[in-house]
Length: 77
Image 1 (tube, one colour):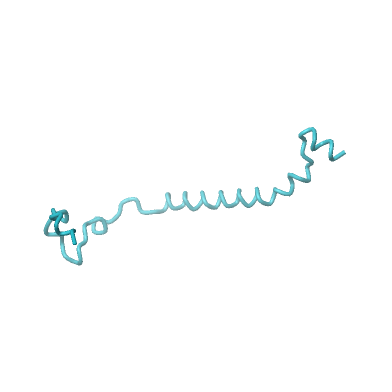
Image 2: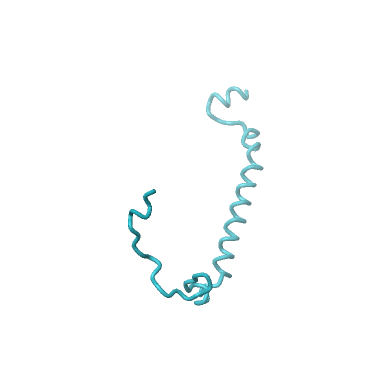
Protein backbone atom coordinates (compact mmCIF):
# COMPACT_ATOMS: atom_id res chain seq x y z
CA UNK A 1 0.00 0.00 0.00
CA UNK A 2 2.83 2.42 0.81
CA UNK A 3 4.31 1.69 -2.59
CA UNK A 4 1.07 2.75 -4.25
CA UNK A 5 1.12 6.08 -2.41
CA UNK A 6 4.65 6.85 -3.59
CA UNK A 7 3.83 5.91 -7.17
CA UNK A 8 0.75 8.14 -7.18
CA UNK A 9 2.86 11.10 -6.00
CA UNK A 10 1.50 11.22 -2.47
CA UNK A 11 4.28 10.98 0.12
CA UNK A 12 3.58 9.15 3.36
CA UNK A 13 3.14 11.44 6.37
CA UNK A 14 6.05 9.81 8.23
CA UNK A 15 8.47 10.86 5.50
CA UNK A 16 7.64 14.55 5.93
CA UNK A 17 7.76 14.32 9.73
CA UNK A 18 11.45 13.44 9.45
CA UNK A 19 12.12 17.00 8.25
CA UNK A 20 10.12 18.67 11.03
CA UNK A 21 13.13 19.24 13.36
CA UNK A 22 15.05 20.86 10.50
CA UNK A 23 12.13 23.16 9.69
CA UNK A 24 11.74 24.11 13.35
CA UNK A 25 15.49 24.79 13.65
CA UNK A 26 15.45 27.00 10.54
CA UNK A 27 12.40 28.91 11.81
CA UNK A 28 14.01 29.54 15.21
CA UNK A 29 17.27 30.64 13.56
CA UNK A 30 15.38 33.03 11.29
CA UNK A 31 13.38 34.49 14.19
CA UNK A 32 16.49 35.00 16.34
CA UNK A 33 18.41 36.55 13.45
CA UNK A 34 15.61 38.97 12.66
CA UNK A 35 15.20 39.80 16.36
CA UNK A 36 18.89 40.78 16.59
CA UNK A 37 18.69 42.92 13.47
CA UNK A 38 15.54 44.70 14.66
CA UNK A 39 16.97 45.21 18.18
CA UNK A 40 20.12 46.71 16.67
CA UNK A 41 18.07 49.01 14.47
CA UNK A 42 15.95 50.14 17.44
CA UNK A 43 18.64 50.63 20.09
CA UNK A 44 21.73 51.69 18.12
CA UNK A 45 22.69 55.36 18.30
CA UNK A 46 21.50 57.11 15.19
CA UNK A 47 23.61 60.30 15.45
CA UNK A 48 27.31 59.45 15.80
CA UNK A 49 29.63 61.86 17.58
CA UNK A 50 31.24 64.34 15.14
CA UNK A 51 34.61 63.63 16.76
CA UNK A 52 34.37 60.00 15.66
CA UNK A 53 33.51 60.88 12.07
CA UNK A 54 36.30 63.44 11.66
CA UNK A 55 39.47 62.62 9.73
CA UNK A 56 42.30 61.19 11.80
CA UNK A 57 45.91 61.20 10.68
CA UNK A 58 48.41 59.88 13.25
CA UNK A 59 47.08 62.11 16.00
CA UNK A 60 47.49 65.32 14.02
CA UNK A 61 44.84 67.30 12.22
CA UNK A 62 45.01 66.88 8.47
CA UNK A 63 47.05 69.76 7.08
CA UNK A 64 47.06 68.89 3.38
CA UNK A 65 45.13 66.86 0.85
CA UNK A 66 46.02 63.18 1.11
CA UNK A 67 45.76 62.72 -2.64
CA UNK A 68 48.83 63.88 -4.53
CA UNK A 69 50.33 63.02 -7.89
CA UNK A 70 53.20 60.58 -8.13
CA UNK A 71 55.45 60.30 -11.12
CA UNK A 72 55.08 56.95 -12.88
CA UNK A 73 58.87 56.54 -12.87
CA UNK A 74 58.68 56.32 -9.09
CA UNK A 75 57.01 52.91 -9.40
CA UNK A 76 59.37 51.53 -12.05
CA UNK A 77 62.20 49.44 -10.68
